[in-house]
Image (cartoon, rainbow, N blue to C red; front, side, top):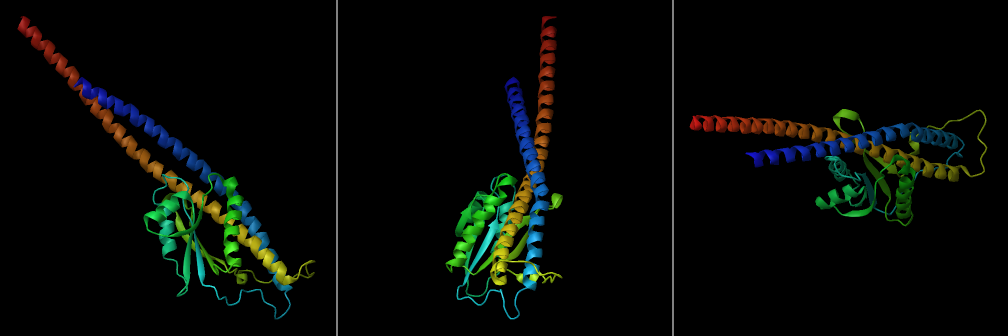
Length: 286
């Protein structure tokens, strides 16, 4: 009885330590999610300014001149899946990869899977998916611009050498309690139709030909979109981790309650056993 009680008390101590670890992970994830959400306004403001500039540049484009991508002989479709970098995020990476797998491509086109996040690479391998390119996801929101540059460089390198002609990004969007929703959207070829031409009373002063200016603004807007996607995905990953750790803490608390109840019962049984033994000894002695 005494040995069993000691084992239960050891498990109680271990479970308390586990509860503290789970709580710490949850607190860190919550702080990172808040920090990423706080950065979104600045990232989106940058994209809005670029969108306004594109609209103004479109207004001065000479009649008959176009900046839309024409037909391409290349048939490569890059699908960029933004997954988790660290564990304890539940089915976060799986949900993103499932959405990427269901993303449609033109008939006969080659599909190249780009994965952002080390946990996503592992999840892709478990699903038997071939990863054409991968990189680590950020751990802190201030790393977002560097990661966006890395992804943009990889994409444009393949666009320029003809490996791919289309890019689709797949990422989670944070939405709090119910779990992340997964968004799928086209990144390239750039859709200028999203930006209506804005003719001002005074035409903007430029030193570049309108088509060249638009191409460079589009590249900068793609970078801004990638920055936003990285920040959104980072926030969603950490919110998923908060939910997973909240569920884990509840289970740990239930286990701790059961162990405490068991310990109380064992102590009571030990006390009862001692009383019975003392009573029996007294009767024998009498």
